[in-house]
Image 1 (cartoon, rainbow, N blue to C red):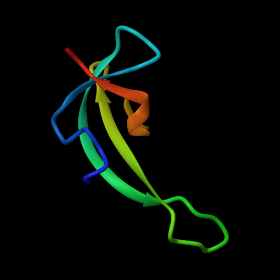
Image 2 (image 1 turned 180 degrees about the horizontal axis):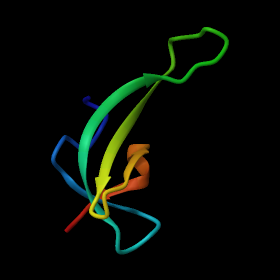
Image 3 (image 1 turned 120 degrees about the vertical axis):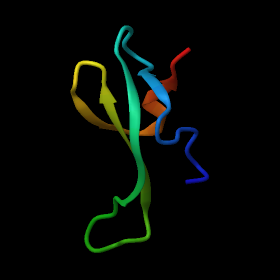
Image 4 (image 1 turned 90 degrees about the vertical axis):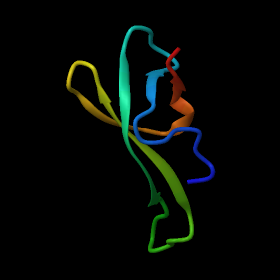
Length: 66
């Protein structure tokens, strides 16, 4: 996806919380419209955290780990 700064395998952390790091497992585009409107899309980033938890985030909630 050209609008996303992350790709599979990137090391990331959440912007708001410190300490948790993970690996991007998937970046995909999903339909977010309601009442049958399929024109609106959003980018979803799937992250596997170091503790084994799997989460889905908007790219703006994540930053690259240093």
